[in-house]
Image (tube, rainbow, N blue to C red; front, side, top):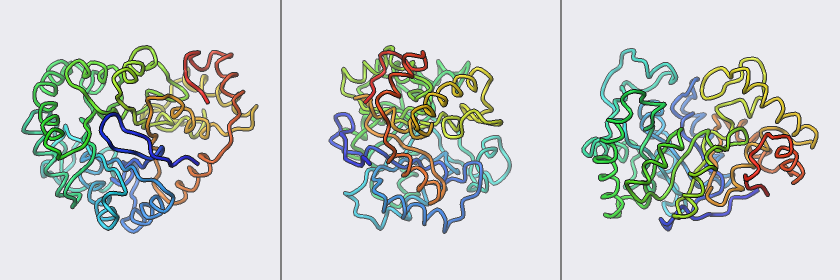
Length: 336
C-alpha cells in the first residue's frame, strides 16, 4: 500500500498518495455522531493517511471543527491540511437550499464570496474553526460554469481579480504554502492558469476510471508547469464503488442510462481479471505523473477498512490493456 510522500507542485509540501476528504464529517447525506467522527479520524491517522482536506461548506463549519479537534493533538509537521475559500458562512439556523445535503449542519448559511475581502475573511474564520495557526493548502472552492451557470463570467472575473490576488498574497506572506482550486470542472482550472501560477488543483470526478477528458489539454499543461492534481471523487460520487446497480449515483444524482451501460462494461472487464471495480477506480488516477494524491470518501472505520482492502488489491497490467482495447479508456491514459 502506497503512503509514500509525493511533492505537491512546487510548494515544498509532500503529501501521502492517499488522503482523507472531510465532507462526510459535515454530515453529508447522513448524520455522523461526534464520537464516530473522532474514532474515524483516529483510525485514518493510524492507517497512515497524512493529507486531510476540508471546507467551510461541509456542514457549514462542522467538518472544519471536527477535523481541527483531532489534528490539534497531532504533531503539526506530520500532516498536510487543506481548506477552501469562496463561501462565507453567515448565521442562519433556518431552512435554506444548501441544507438539502448536510444533515444537522451548524446554524449557518454559506454565501458565495470570491472577492479579495471575502477570501481573507473566509481564511481567518477557517483558522478559528480549526483551532490551528495555519493551513498548508488553500483552495478556491466551486468556481466554474456548471456551478454558477449564467453568472459564471462575472463570478470568474471577481475570483481572478480579487480572490486569487488574496490567495497569492497569503502564499507570498507564508500564511499558506500552496494555493489552488477545488472544483468539479477541469476547464475552469485551465482558464485560471492564464491568470496565476497555481500549485495544485483538487479535481473531483473528472479524472477517473470513467472519465479522462482532462488528458486532452489540462493534465499535460499541469505537467509542463509543475502543478499537481489531487483527485477527489474517484468513484464519480458513487457508481464506481457500487457498480451499475439501481439507484447508482453519478455526479451527485441518479446515473443516466448511458453511464450505467458504460460502467457495466468496465465492471465486466474488471471481473474477468478478478479485480473489484472500486479497487481499479482507486488505483487508476495515481498512474498519471501529475497526480500527487487521491482522497477516497469514507464516513466510518468500516468504510476505511473497506478502502484499505481495495488499496491493497493487486491489479494485473492486462486489465488496463483490455479496457483500452475495448474503448473504455483513452489510449493515451497512463497506466502501471
